[in-house]
Length: 356
Ligand code: 3AT
Ligand code: MG
Picture 1 (cartoon, protein in one colour):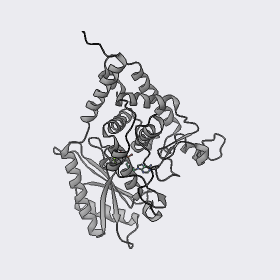
Picture 2 (cartoon, rainbow, N blue to C red; picture 1 turned 90 degrees about the vertical axis):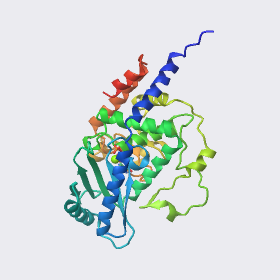
Picture 3 (cartoon, helix red, strand yellow; picture 1 turned 180 degrees about the vertical axis):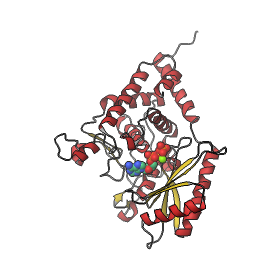
Picture 4 (cartoon, rainbow, N blue to C red; picture 1 turned 30 degrees about the vertical axis):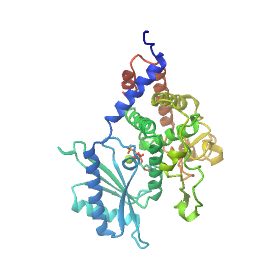
């Protein structure tokens, strides 16, 4: 008997999923890039130890959470295991001087920033065609914890979670809506939106809520609190695999189309807060309303797009998003949703259109 042709919808999602994998794979960092970055980290750690012998330099952000793209910058955090230590701003100034003397990096110390950091970069060279950019901060233990949380989410369902996140990162960069300094959203913000969607919007969920799972043994406050915030989450991913599995079998493409539709149409931007810890919350319950009659112009500006940080619950990760920014971002979700919902004949062309 003749083979039955797949229904077009299914065929389209199959093709699109394959295109998404292929697209994302070629954007992953190469082995040599990863090795080179590790060399840089070790070199910097050795230099920092000459200032503070009890210091360690750790990676966080995309180079440590499984969501790294080729040539993404390095986020490094210096921890000092001693009670008597220099202040972050003094360290930034001293480290800036030291690196300027001892290395070929361009060095820009920012000792008076809200979070003092040293910015470093290397110009492109034949062995390093795209150069390197790196930020070094101090004692940012919450960032190390949120990096670990995102890494655990990535490990639960690597194929679907990583493909979706990496694609959205590239897409948001190509569409120029990934610049917190220009009023749009950071990569970290987009990653949180994806996890929120997979834990709380999809039914059945694609991911469990790691922050609400019962702990295996009693935990004390000292063990779980970092900088005054509760950072506990279920992190035994091997065990989780034996106890929990998702009933949701949608393909990456179906999830992506649905993600765009949800943030184009359904998410309540005016009143809602996306929280990976607690689901959809109300701005009013967090005191984050963007009340147009408010005298506080500033707070209104800050809360157009509300994304609760997983641990720093009073921090809106979307606070940088401006009025224009939210309009543009939402417009991009609508555009993406429209391109994919029309189900064009060739998935690969749809993907190209989406990202140009
Ligand atoms: P790129 O590959 O650099 O685009 P990334 O995953 O490294 O993406 P970011 O550069 O946006 O993401 O952020 C790096 C890390 O810094 C992620 C998170 O651990 C921390 N971080 C960034 N923004 C915030 C924030 N607003 N609140 C708390 N932690 C943050
Ligand atoms: Mg980064």
